Length: 254
Image (cartoon, rainbow, N blue to C red; front, side, top):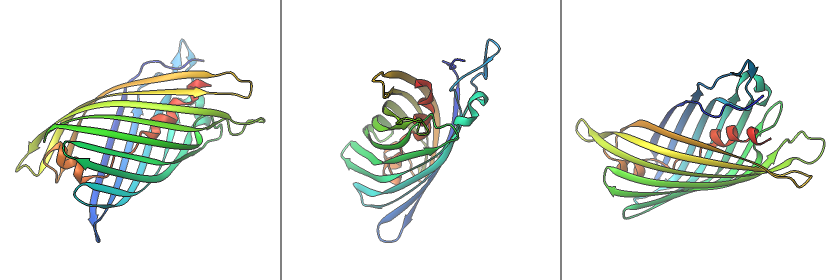
């Protein structure tokens, strides 16, 4: 069997932020991924290929004009092509999140833990991670951003010997241009992204396997209650890492 190297991925993502008493904010998020990856190659089942994912998240923190500090929790599942259904994983993540805005720059990030459960645990488990996102606003409606993350955990946690160590590095770039809708209290934006994930798997024998995953995307965002990209950055908590894509990238390294 072999992995499908190229396929299209559709993502739907929604967030709602609600001011709460005492200078705090509650944010709820939902994400859904679906791919059109072939389930067969030359009549044989495809292997270790990302099929679909769901992620639900909650963030709660203290906020003022320039700073945000809080906690986050996320929960969901990642599914692979039918030949690897036993690798389908439920996951949970939790930790600290924060953001600081200074002039035309915004710096945010998270530090936390990520764990998964599967019948055949071939993906990232028992991991700690750190992530950061830097944004620059050319003007009120144009945003450039870069993101980076590192995670370290285990794979094959049901192995008769010790689990295999996993190191994951992720980088991303994004450009966004927003346009006011109606009276200017709402906005739509067009954005483009490039995201790269590299996974390294060690073993008790000293060998190292490595795989990389590249995703190029374009999309549309609609924001209610914020009339520009800069306003949107201030109205929401920092974006969480792409946990679903991290988990989906790991089985191919085995």
